[in-house]
Length: 182
Length: 174
Image (tube, rainbow over all chains, first blue to last red; front, side, top):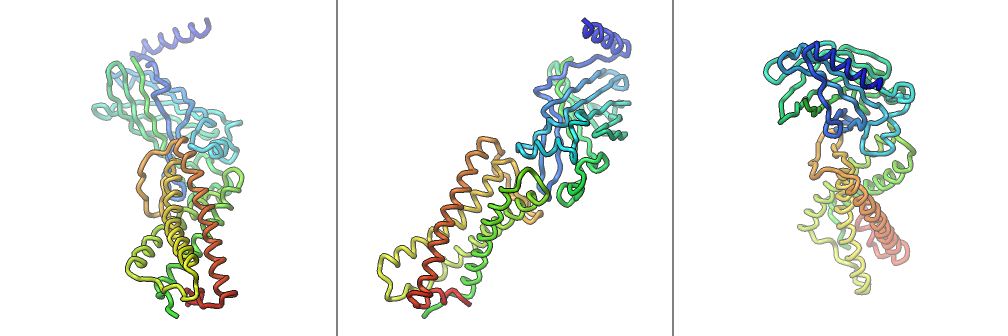
């Protein structure tokens, strides 16, 4: 019941703002992190994420987005690696289970293009970030794609001997691919 | 007695040193628990050694195609000549098959091979857990079988040197 009230009020708020919360297709959407390990490209996916996009295609400025991921759900394709990234030196997932992005502004940057600005919080460290996001309609779905380059050491990801960027590069690109229905 | 060419000797000993290094490094790296920078480094070096062996194997096969090795000593019985030839051809097979299986195993695990951190080798297919499980025993058992033939090869060379004293090993020594 409480949830319904919350949902109703959220809907009310977004309607008031002229935007609508899209129904994210979690199975088809993905949040991935790509980086280089001794120059070998590594692609990994966060298996658990919660993406909420409150979108108005007529006036993108009224849109909002939040992304929440379970840091321990990063899948690098290897059991030992998956265990490693949840450790204190990396995501410290027991203390910081979630990484979040909350938009503060979404602006149109031409047809099908948006510039998203907001706060990225990983491992208890927050940073203001801005990145391009493309949007296109596919049937009744909206498909969003964006890439956000970050520096892992700015978030203390990889402490101690893992600070060596010759081993794991500092540059990490977080990619969003979101499929959401109106 | 005829000796091998300097080029053949160089290629032989380089490959010998590199396959022993890659073999021992392979056994060492898989025994490291969890994930550590040392382990990741060893994996990369192991792959670089393997690719080097593969490149040298190509060079050796090309050299061998144009140069006949010195003949077997006259005193050797026919079965020993055949056995020696068979082991030599098998070892040629392994210096191709072992690194190739490692390359395919790495791709199957979804990890592209970047030789010396510079040359991005072709990603021939997408890795899956099934392919990884398929190539792992192939790479392992090719290695173990190669080790058996390397031991036979070394054992035979030492027998020629210390028991037969027929100068067969000296043909491969600079």
